[in-house]
Length: 177
Image 1 (cartoon, rainbow, N blue to C red):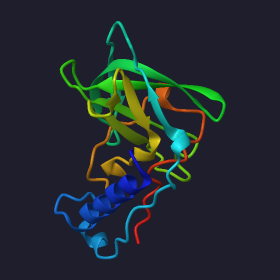
Image 2: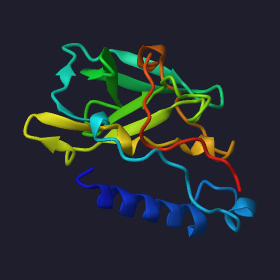
Image 3: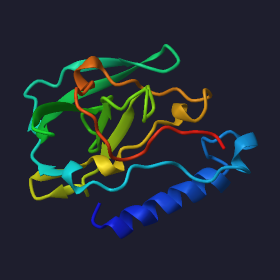
Image 4: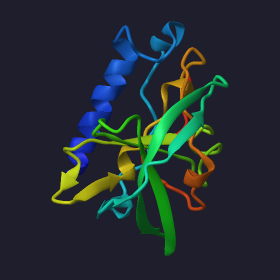
């Protein structure tokens, strides 16, 4: 997130996609009344520029899915950050050794109340870097498609990414209008 205006523009584009695009996860019968997603206000304290502590051994990990399936990932590395004076470790995964994107599924103290109970995601692309450091911006946390429709299968965050702090940034619960 470079600016609050950039984040607002991104959210507007996403709302437009969800309301009008044929590949929207919003069920068709809910789109006419769709007024946009709900978000926390931008919080600069939940944006970090930090190195990834890459794991020497990339262990395979099977993540359960919202439809009782499993998906395989590699435990790629971890970020160590401080949130509300608490030390937090969050794991980053890759689907395979050749993928460049980092996938960060997580739950936090807002999951199931203010945010989707199944957890939220962050995706970090190579463009989300400043030198050797990554930009870990929870303002970009989003709900998986299964938060909008049971027609989707989504990986669930593993226990190691169940954070014991609230992450009051990014998308909130989806409430159909």
